[in-house]
Structures are given as C-alpha cells and as structure tokens.
Length: 191
Image 1 (tube, rainbow, N blue to C red):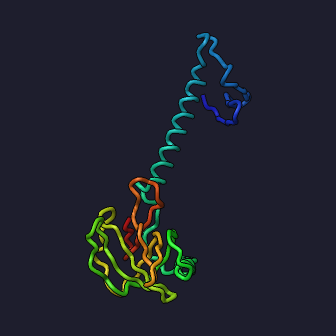
Image 2 (image 1 turned 45 degrees about the vertical axis):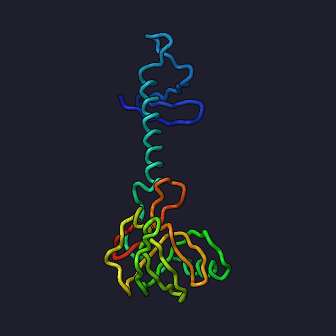
Image 3 (image 1 turned 180 degrees about the vertical axis):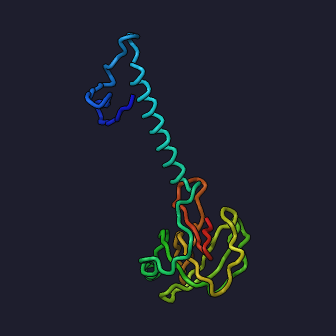
C-alpha cells in the first residue's frame, strides 16, 4: 500500500489510495483490533518520524562539531573583506576578531615549542600589512611544504600587536566552543 505523509503540529494526513484522503489525529487514532494500542500504520509513522529526527540531529552535531570538514579545499587569492577587517582591527587595536584572509609567506620562523607547539610564519596581505600566523601543531597537521613566496588562505582569530597582529585558532576546537579555523596551502586544508 502506497501513501504520502504530510505533517503539521496537530495531526497527520495519510494518503491511503488514489481516491481517499484520511485525516488521522495521532492522539486519538486507536486500533480497532487491540484497544488501547495505536494502529500499526501510526506506530510505523511514529518510528519513521523519530528515526528522521535522530538522523537530522546527528548530522547537525557532526557537521557543527568540526569532526567532518564541510570546507572546500584550494587557496583563495582574495577573500572578500578580509584585508579591510584586518586593517581596521589593527588600526583600532582590536583583538578576538574571527576573520578569513589570504596572503604571501614572507618568512618561515622556528616552531614555538613552549606549551602547545605552534608552527610560525609571517605573511603579507594585499594591503601590505604583515601578520604572524601561529598554527597549533598539537591539534592540527604541520604544513611541511611551506616556503617563502607561497600563497596561503586562513580562517582564524586575530589578536592585535604593534607588529601587525597574530592569527591563531587556525585549527578545529576539540571542545566545540570556538569556531573552527583552518589554513589552506597548495590545495590542502589544514584544520
């Protein structure tokens, strides 16, 4: 038997055959064969609705937690507004600014091994501003092929300093409390 299911808050409409629409109120529709029990079709519909809800909730949790990356790979030469946001944040001494941007590597520095380990390098934005990128390699993969002149794109948190600023949080947050960041280099996303 084929049927179509339409939902609203108070009831369910089930198409039983080509000629008849039957309106079923889930709270009162009971089986004639077993008093006090919902009919088999209604029980199956409730199971289907529950399974659909659980799958939708699981999908939301997995995609929002950063366990599965929904980001596209590849370096983006210009990310709209990134340079302007960073220029403004630097001029106004602002920190804790989540931003996307891109630039050219001007210097690869030694790793910072105090506390959490960070791969460090300096990039220059299209505006001429320089930024230190501090990429946590305890939570993300190290970018081994990085060299001066390479283009990178990033998503992270800007912290002001007199030299131009620092971008950090270029990785996923295992606790899920901070927006996930990333670095894109040579077609690969490091998160």
